[in-house]
Image (cartoon, rainbow, N blue to C red):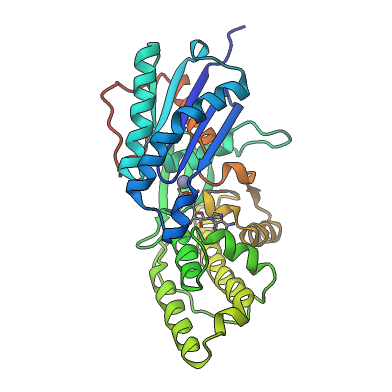
Length: 341
Ligand code: KG4
Ligand code: ZN
């Protein structure tokens, strides 16, 4: 019987250096080097991110190989994130992958980062079946907020998306206003669990169709905090849990309203959640409740495959490998790129 191909994948679109080895849809190993340095700057410093990718990439590739007990000679292809992302960061992963593919004389495969977040749902996970086509995917990360109509692996249509800030930015910027460390989404989630989500009602933006806007929310929150701090300089400290719970409640409701609209419009009852913000525990609970009420089938990934990781790049590369969708070695990573179709 023919063995499934083994693919090494690199993800370096932002501030995480991630490496995975995958055979078919089975993850053999995946490792992530998170760059802690950015938290002290309150956001990702692109120049520093590229330098740390350079430093970390070879040790992480070695670690992934050792964990999976796979050597270079066993590889059938090398994959990497071709965009979107920070160009300096992308170039480190792309150049590493292309050089390795050239040296080993095996195909190289460039993968679209956001498409990979969606296709992460096809990674083999014990006790879990992948979604059936067609399904909708709410893809929510630091750079994207999209409702995607997924007809097939490489047939995806964006039904609606963020017109300005992505929802991850809304989480992170609200957190920054409250003085929390970058990336703040995870802190908002943690503190929200102890707070009252209805304590501070914030208004939701009115945006046509299935698109999203989060920049107005951020401004509303900033003005509210400034006003309260002028009255009581300890306002944030005294109300941190309720503030986080109220921010999270508002952002999750904005997402859910649009998803309800999209599900009704398309008459589809399968929904997948993807991207870093889908790690949010309040969001998971709210969407689980909605799916029970509405009779949807809801697909949620384990946390390790929601935030940036290389297993999702490897999964997408496996699907491209099966279709002989290889790239030439002159492929260039770009900060903005088209989906594969
Ligand atoms: O998908 P991802 O890891 O990277 C991008 O492609 O952008 O998403 C990162 C985003 C950040 O904004 C981060 O704050 C957010 O996901 N995030 C969360 C949580 N974990 C990560 N937001 C809310 N709650 C969380 N638990
Ligand atoms: Zn991502």
